[in-house]
Image (cartoon, rainbow, N blue to C red; front, side, top):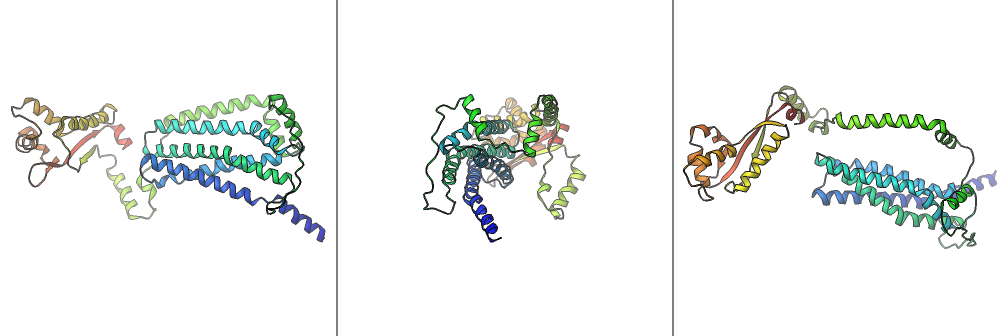
Length: 371
């Protein structure tokens, strides 16, 4: 009984690999930190809504890293040189991870480029950067770590035996070129072919009769995915980030219930002094309003700048940067058709500068829905 206990204890010590867990944790932390750094460098501020992305990165990283580590023990039916074994793993098992990484990085960068919201753009950029960093560490750091750990395991040295040499007589490398025939030949010698549920399920899924139903199923899923991307809308509002019993959430819900469908105007307020006397500045503000009308979000723009442009064409006054504010204050706002803009323009106490102005967009139904 004592011998059986000692044997189980020895097996646990041989199979226990705490350094593998430390290495995986370090790689995941570096990947998440790198993604966060790219997000801050790109947007200029810290976005706390990015944090859920790191759970996705951790899931992807755990899958890839554990599969990479398990590949060493999976190909254990024949003794080969550690270098040859690692080269085989990289050439036989790693292409799938490589393709997955390229697809994730490319698709998330494309999604970030066409994303209409800043939060979605930051999310996709963070995922792309973190996966790229994870893939880089998988090649440059994890592969070396697997080789060192696997070589020590092949020597018969346990993880805590730091200064033990072990058996250094390995089988000499046999493959000079990893072509397809050599790869599959070595794969058949290394693979552990003991029966298991996962292997039996895999054999059934790759059978000839099962390919057509799988293609049909994937096609149906792809059709629904394309339809969902085009029609499904995520309604993310401020109250979703507040506790259910918070007074501010109750106020927002009551406001949306009573006034959400009746507010047809969107107010655009400029609270800082702007050089309205510059024609380029006025044209930029008018272009901003017109872009919402062209996109179908608004039916018209109510702006004193638009009316002032018409007034300027018909007035006899000389309007230049020095006379712009006096003309607006003493002539434009005193004329009957334009007196309605008096409350939309605020001057400083010396009446020499516009410190605040207000404009409106009359929203269409599309604008109300997207508001």
